[in-house]
Length: 373
Image 1 (tube, rainbow, N blue to C red):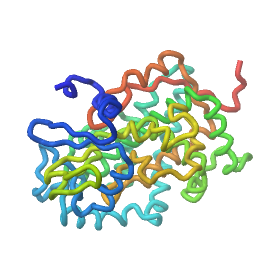
Image 2: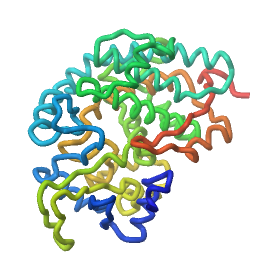
Image 3: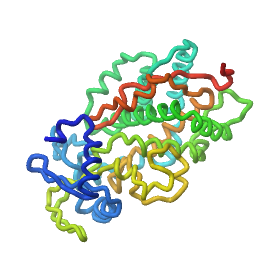
Image 4: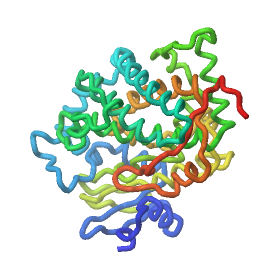
């Protein structure tokens, strides 16, 4: 009952971990839940013993035996077949082919952001990022040239929010998660100007200084290691879907020095404890934004915003490429400026359902060649 009353389920779980330790259990009705934040035990369960923990917790309104069952909820051989079919879509060769399509959406986004800059007003960049990611999904996933960034009431945007089928699930799932990740990056850039400048200087080294309209390529962004670390650090501090990363045991399972996990038990993760563990992320305080911490090799399960093991997010590389292409273009020309309390309060008003997201990210833009007053 205590968990049902809270608006931030994941933060309550973090407090329970402080109280009960890195592995503890509770019941949701008749369903046993095991909460784990020990990376070694998670590695044993999610990777080494994958054959016994190959399925997610069933979604109440979805039947895993239906023909239209999507990848996330598919089980056993059905999941294996679907994953085998989908994996080639996100190969390096395919991602390289999709990068021009993403850049076309990026160009449209930059035009809209330029209009906002020219207005001189603060605005909610999150709303623009949502339209951008939806444009990208329809273009890369379905070959449709939509115009959502110029028409927020576009019929594709409205229809896609109603779709929940096997054919569309992966692309639609990437719409909110990627736009939310970009929103958090925008927030960090606005509230950490020194880190923003460091990232801009890093990005500048890959562009021709005499060219204003150069579009980043797949090869170019693949070399931007500090940009990669910046995004990873943002997702460490602001994980988006921690509550959906879980597994269900298909038979009794023995954990050394712990005991037996009965068949049917749901194993969930306390991602916040993992992502802010000083033993995993020190010596710099995990509460400090510090991208360089990713230059040091960490435990393979210390950072898990995209999930763990064979059932980790199939679209992770696509999402990272999409974010890098946007940020490289945006930060080459503009700086993101905070609007005081309007900006800083964004992370104090997070909404948590399956996705943890801000209501808005209020910022303003400043051209980098513009003299500050």
